[in-house]
Length: 409
Image (cartoon, rainbow, N blue to C red; front, side, top):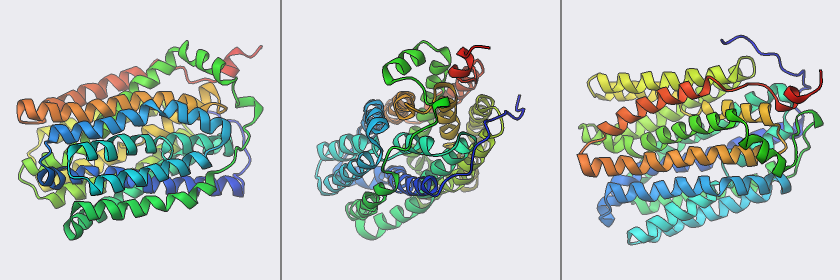
């Protein structure tokens, strides 16, 4: 199943392409690193403002849902006008949302700042827009690897920012920590210059105009299989990223263990994103996705079956981290391969919307389940079943360009 796939011979990446990859990776490092630290704020913020886990989980769920809902439109705009202005606008709104949340005294401010504003902002300064720009600048044979490098940036941010955020919360309280994190987001503003412009894709894989591309994708079963798989990915990431620290505290472990687990997820996903991206440049992307989702099911099941301890939590975080965002370069690589790169941000944005619907449910339903049942057990079991479903859904995907499939022979 994992036989090497032939790819179009491509020239080496230009200096401009490398600048775009590096600048994009740093932007994703900052934006995703800060976002992945929000789970650490659940307990101190909740105690200070008397906000329940369900209410905080709903705020983060709204963030995830808005992130996904506006992504296709933001992606289409970036495809047409370039990514630089989109990234700068997203970073500015992200900063404003963190400042608002840091100064609020109630749930409304948290929901507006961390929920609405950050959710809208992230559509402009994270994976879909950045990968769309990179996909147009990088030759086809190196595209999935470049996607893996950018995706690894999100995990590097998680590894670096999450432990720092825990230290900031302890030293400055949660309000001061949010302000410092806002300062990190401000660094993305000048980096937007690195992804500015609209590099032209080759005619061979460019794809049709947006309206035709949308109709083509919507009528193609593989597009919906990619959506289903990415839905499950979002459910897993939002649930684990938002609720794992609190779950571990419920099991009697210290807050530091939760922070270390999030950091290890980031550390191992640096390796995982790059590795899955590199493998996707040589082997079948759909079968690699089947493998990722299947291994997720195994990792969660083993975590539930062994006694909870600091060691078991750290091992789970490391193994799950290797699988954390490996879906991103593979999924975007399949979209680029099958549908072309002309509308990669728009089509990738639609698939990402399904990811964020899953993320909405993962963050929110976990809080609902805890309030109703007093534990996260039902959500952990659902996560295993969903991982198996995602693995099965990727099997029938047709991993061939629609341009090649319709070409005369």
